[in-house]
Length: 386
Image (cartoon, rainbow, N blue to C red; front, side):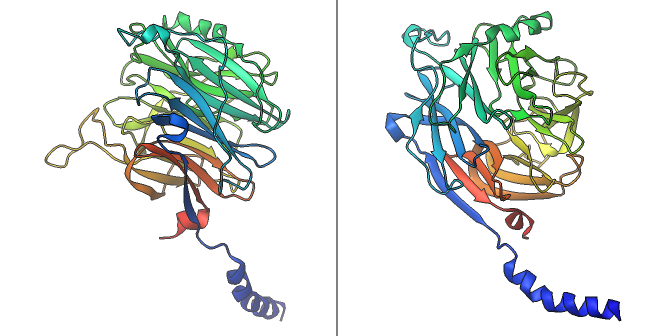
């Protein structure tokens, strides 16, 4: 009798549950279009959601062209309604005390300042946002906001943090992220980094690691080298981090290796004892920055252009460079072991991206679409929808 009653109640409540089930959501808005505030091109997006639910979208503002070197600033826009609308863009990093010098330019480079690779980390315990960035790919700085990104502290140089990596490589270039950093359950802040040790200004050959802070950004330390440039692992760089269900940290890296797949390694603490790197068959590598986050529901989400370079016969080209298009979102229900669901977010030209999640589970993807940076808002219902 109890079973029959339960079945009747379930049948009666089923239409009500369906009525209140979330509808698939996908919305897009322009955040950093070319020409905004006189900027020729915005690139290298990053996005975080603060403890108060404010969305911070930031990127490189490349004033004169799209090149990696030049007169470049870091700009930020805030959203207090979950990424639906955006406040005016503001210049936030290294506004005084210029450090000029562009080694990639024969004439005029001595008057340019390249502020690059901004990475924000939300400190849930301190209620702060740490922002790390580099200048001229040679020096690294940290600053902090205590008011959800409205104002920022004076930058503090932390370049010395990278010195321990010289025992591996005599680096000439250093870079944070790009994208965002993470905070572990024990309060540790972890930021992915990469370094290059060719000629001054060259971005290859390269290797990847992390730096971390156990005192809320007051001091930073170098972790162990996570991804060396050796053997089948060719020039790892532009890495991203996420925590797994058991507290371990997964690092996923771009490279130009022959398998055309992302490199994955795992650490118990985000800094040491990295596992042997492996190529993940389902995470295609068009040589482009990607993003990964742990969603509040327990799944992992991954964003990246899903393409491969093929020859005329349709066979995959080893170490080929797939086109930067078909930006796709993947879901893993098992801590990144498998990615059974993949859905196209932007079919056309699309490149770098960064992911974040709102308190209600809505996902934000800030990404390069053509020559603009846009923000997509979507839910898991949209991802699971055929």
